[in-house]
Length: 302
Ligand SMILES: O=C1C[C@@H](O)[C@H](O)[C@@H](O)C1=O
Ligand SMILES: [Co+2]
Image (spheres, rainbow, N blue to C red):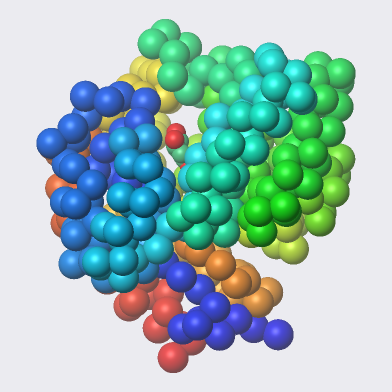
C-alpha cells in the first residue's frame, strides 16, 4: 500500500540553516520567532528542536501561534563513554522534553569518538571505528533507549552520521541487524550517506521497513570534491558549501520520495542543510526547497 501523500507525510525544515548548534556564533541574530515565522512563510509544517529553543511551555506557545509542530530532536548519545545506565538517564530526560512538545521521534547518534566537531580531523578519512565489544554495548544500549522511548510514545530514530562509528552503509547494516526492529528505527539522511558512500538508494532500499524519520540534505558535488581534496573538517566542509537544500544541489530526491511513498511511509521528512546563513539566506533556501518538493516530488503523485 502506498502513503497518502497529503495526509501521511509532514514536511519540516531544520533550524540548522538559520543557526548551527555546533558553531553558536553562526546565525545568532536569528531568534526563535524569526525562525518559526520564516518556516510558516516558506510553507512547512514544522521543525526539529534546536539547541537555542526555550522550555516546552514557551516553545509550545510560539508553535501554536503559527500552527507549527515539532518533528523531533537530536540526542548526542554516549553509551560507550558513559555506560548504558548513565546514558539512559540522559536519554530519559530527553524523552520527557520530547513528550512535552509532542514530538514523535528522538534522533539518536552515538557520539563517542565522533570527529564531527573536531578542528583538525579530516571528515573524509578520520572516522572512528568501534570494537566488537563497543558494537555490542551500543546495540544493547539502543534497544534499551527504545524501551524508554516507548513509555513516552516516542520512537528511536538512529542517525547514521559522517565522522562517527556508525556512518557507512556497512555500519548501518550492522546496527540494523543487531538491534530490535520494534525498539530501534532508522533515520535516513540522504546527504550523510551520499558523502560517506557515494550512493543513497542502497541504504534506503535495504532498510525501508526500519525508516521512521527522514532528513533531506542535498550535496553540491563540486564543493564536496573540493572539501575532500583539501581534507577539510566537517565544519569547514559545510562552511565550504558542501550541503544545501533539495533542488539546489546534485542529488535526485525523486526516487527517494517514490520509494518512501510506495512503501507507505508515514511521518516527517525534514529538509536539513547546514550552511552559513550569511551566504545562504535561510528563508530563500527554505523557499527553494519547498518549490522543489511541490513541483518535483509531490507532483509525481498528483
Ligand atoms: O541531523 C543532523 C543534526 C546535526 O546536528 C548534524 O551535525 C547534522 O549533520 C545532521 O545531519
Ligand atoms: Co541529519
